[in-house]
Image (tube, rainbow, N blue to C red):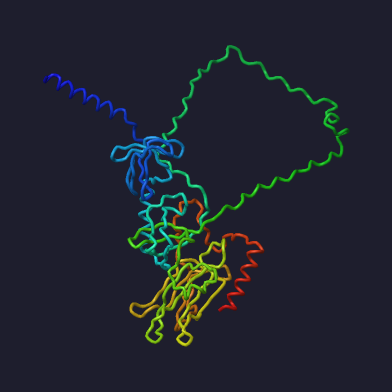
Amino acid sequence: MRQWTIAGILALGLAACSTSSDREPVLGTAYVGPVTLQVRDELAARAELAATLQHGERVDIIGRRRRFYKVRTSAGAEGWVDGRQLLRPEDMEALRALAERAKGAPSQGRAGVFEALNVHTLPNRSAPSFFQITAEAQADVIAHERVPRVSMEAPEFIPSAPAAAPRRKSVSKKEPAAPPPPAARPPGLPKEWMELSGHPGGQNLPPVEKQPAAAAPTAPAGPVDDWSLIRSKNGRAGWVLTRMLLMSIPDEVAQYAERARIAAYFSLGKVDDHGVEKPVWLWATLSQRGVDYDFDNLRIFTWSTRRHRYETSFIERNLRGYLPVRLYGAPGQGVKGFRVVVVEKSGERVERDYGLQGFRARVTARRPPPAEESWPTGLQGERKSEPQAEQRAQGWGERLRGLVDRVKSRFRR
């Protein structure tokens, strides 16, 4: 009986060894991108669920088919996932660096959402959404970016092996027994070669006309999405579609936006109206579409204690401004003014200081702008913000609509 027990133990040990040796080797590592990720046994819509993973969990890559990867979890479950929902180790580090950088960036206003909104790791609809903003929560808006709507390719998680150098065949050189014969002289031209070429006599040959090179076809401009970088209450940072955000400015002020997008807003102080305090608002809005700057209008709204409504105390139009807008002032003395980066009429890019006189503003200083650091979008081509950069040509219809909107806004002021 004892012999059978020892034999059984040995058989089980051999079986375990053979099972571990049959496991597929690890080809790479990755991390889960979205909030939850389902791992399927096979590449089929109705395949059995092998595991459900959470954002940030590490998995081993053990196979690949097109953009799909076969993974092995820390618990040993194996299955298939979409490679676009996985992150490389450097992607996880970039996501942490983005949150750290956004932590120190000035807020351009708070925004809410109509319903739960997915926050993406990159400004791309196919990028993993690693957390959500609920309908009751708000987030700080940090920056805006216009990004082409392109398809997102799955990252490479399997390192490619270096190509082996081709082996050179050794050819033994043998000296010929006798030297080769001298090369024969080429035959000469026939006497009637000019007639044969189609030009009798060979005189007054017409010049050869150079055909103009065909113009390269221009690729049609694809769709572009407006994205906003947001910072949640717990410090996480990510990208959301701008049109899904609702800037949290009171409706009694937001009604004056006149279809322009509020890119940033700030409270400059308060006005006391018989015991009721009303904030004074500064905002930056963008009325144009398809431009490479963030706002074209600065405006200050103050509360009128006589008419009991908001009125414009300062406005500047036709700007080419870039976020962030920064407030400045001495501690304990309130806001003294604000700073913006704009492009002057001469084409020079400067940083302006606007000083507040009451609730009116005027330019008090100009200086070279600080070094600009664009937010990483995961694309090779970042937005051009230099004044010499080419602007997208606007059609006559867009220019006419812009002129009509400016005239309307002047009479509605």
